[in-house]
Length: 329
Image 1: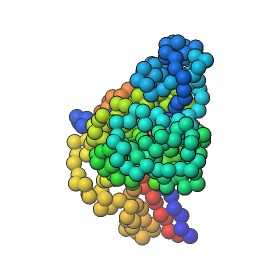
Image 2 (image 1 turned 30 degrees about the vertical axis):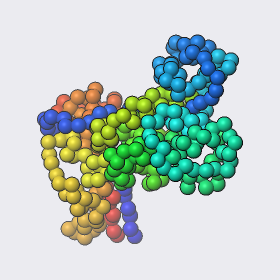
Image 3 (image 1 turned 45 degrees about the vertical axis):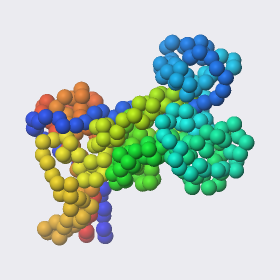
Image 4 (image 1 turned 180 degrees about the vertical axis):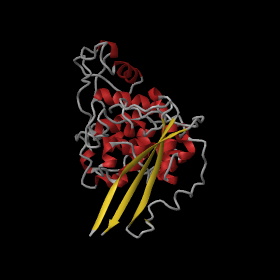
């Protein structure tokens, strides 16, 4: 009989060092229509609304418009067509790519923007072989892919970031539950690593969830900022890239240095026990700097450490090793 155990172990070590990189995972949530109204006069966006600042900014920039009745409809869902229009407006990309042509978008109010957004690298026609379905509410997974693809289309730095995160550990519940497709990992990594999108309070990313106009306003204002920066200027994304390419974030969060292939040489390989009773393989080695418990360093801190956990020292490095243990009987 063969028993396989897969899990994560945690070890606490005492050490003192200078933090070289890190930042906390931004937990947040994640379109458009016509007519105009001053953001401040939207009768359904009171001053107390959580997204009022972003809505005001997005409207003043011309990304969003209100409705003829003076409303913004912040809780309304965003469709694929609307998000294509929004990306086309906010993006500084050059339309150098091939423009996708969808038969079900021909004559639609969003046709020119859908074509432009695809030419700018946001939309891949192969993803919609059965039609674009412009009135379908866009999912968070789609939004992540569109924005990441658009960034990569304009910047080799972001293109490399997508490549580097193909095998990373994504700090969302769906990754650990194995309910997220491997092909989605790079796109989710880029939007989380840059702060474009984040997880929910329960640790999930919600790839199948849709997005409201208020949430989209927040994301668009972030995109306007992110597209002007290089991928390697984001410490969270650098950490995800490091784990993806080396299997560990040790170099970034501690003074200990290893060569790029040091951990890769043992990653995923079965190591037999001396008594021949079984074997073990190491998948990833992740470190969280917990010296300052109120400001734990590492994008993985919210995943592995709850705020109410208590440890006896200020000088702590918490180590996590994802292992597979095989016991043969």
